[in-house]
Amino acid sequence: MTEHAPLILDVAGTTLTDVDRRRLAHPLTGGVILFARNWENREQLLQLTSSIKAVRDDLLICVDHEGGRVQRFRTDGFTHLPPMRALGEMWMDDGKGAKAVPGSGALRATNAATAAGYVLGAELRACGVDFSFTPVLDLDWGESGVIGDRAFHRDPRVVALLAKSLMHGLLQAGMANCGKHFPGHGFVKADSHTEVPVDKRSLKAILADDAAPYPWLSSTLTSVMPAHVIYPKVDSRPAGFSQRWLQDILRRQMRFDGAIFSDDLSMEGARRLDGKVVSYTDAGIAALQAGCDLVLLCNQSLGDGQAVDELIDGLEKAQKQGRWQPSVDSESRRLALLPETLPQPWDELMYQPAYLQALDLLP
Image (cartoon, rainbow, N blue to C red; front, side, top):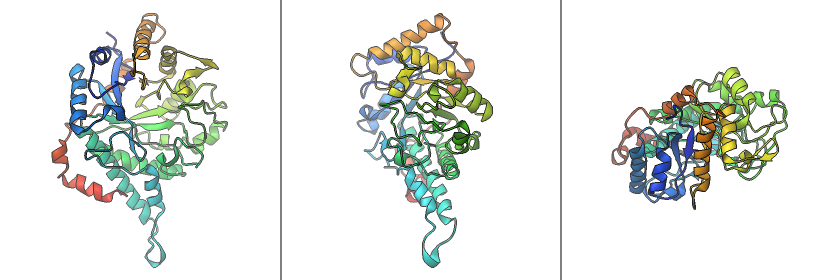
């Protein structure tokens, strides 16, 4: 039995199979990430999350649920949340003419961001989901198609304050948060799902701009997800596989002490290290050695799911060989992301004054 469960896996369908249960029960598995294919309606989702917790009640049930185009559950009562850019646009809108009030847009936007975080977290938690990989802290340079309107704003100060407001709303709902994609994915055009993006700026330029929200939010962020982007003037490896980025800069320089998730190991940006195509196991070990506490493998349970079993078996074998060392600190960071309060049932949430007020504040 390991004292560290670093793997976040997915499941293929809307109910658990015996194979899913076997994988989730493995001591190296620390959580599950859900997708739109795991969704039919709220009743089904609640049954699925309950069955996952029945396997192990400490499994962290995660989802990418940011708002805008990245929102996995959209029907059966789920609020269609705005893209984060809408909050940045609200920040800039102080009204027109004689009725314009300088700064009023910023104050409305911070309220709206808190409302978005609360609605997002409360609705997910009512369906048994523990955690969402949000907010995006990337800057809106207008170049990245994969980031695009997922970003709040071009100004890192606006990004930091809107993100902090959204995280306050998540906290009100009893949910942790995840800043992504450290140190910044917004400057590069390439999509790390299908390519290996390269950002050729200096460390000084990145820290002054794209990475600036991270130290400003170091006391508020509970987890961070690094980008599958190479910054060659800092390290030859993508940030999620770089000790320089994760341990020297994020941990020591920025004093971040929360959990670090790798981005999906099946993305193209994670499959090539030092110019070579690597296995999921080798990618997972490299991420853990670099300083990740948890590693994600997404969309590989489809079909025979061979890649999932290879990663579980490979990581178990590598641990016995001493190729990676379990971390008690990493495990405590994982457990700290689990909600500490009971969720509000959906039918009660629908009549709760704070929830109804939050809906009114959304753009």
